[in-house]
Length: 114
Image (tube, rainbow, N blue to C red):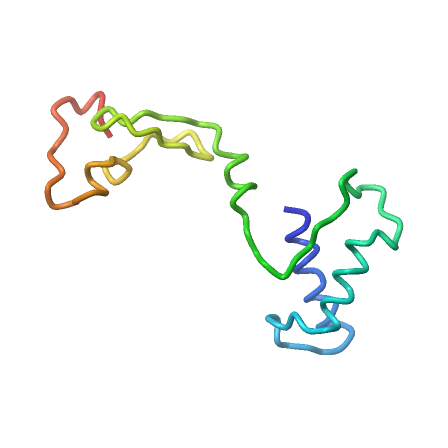
């Protein structure tokens, strides 16, 4: 998350220092600032031991997966549903529903199934 925030802060820095309103700009100025941060040329008491690996790509896959701590099993199809919040699965999480929503049968035991 911190690397994504640093990425966005470079865009903010470009806006403040150069008035660049195009927030999609990953040109030479952006890349130079990103390389400066990745190289650790500035003091940073919170810099991770492995250093930063800022990039021009946005992805939260690892961060989202880290927070999916609530695991549920669908009572109908047995699929494991992971959530960041403690919320049981719904019918739409069922593999049978996702395979063909028109053919998904109603659950025989509403207490067990979403």
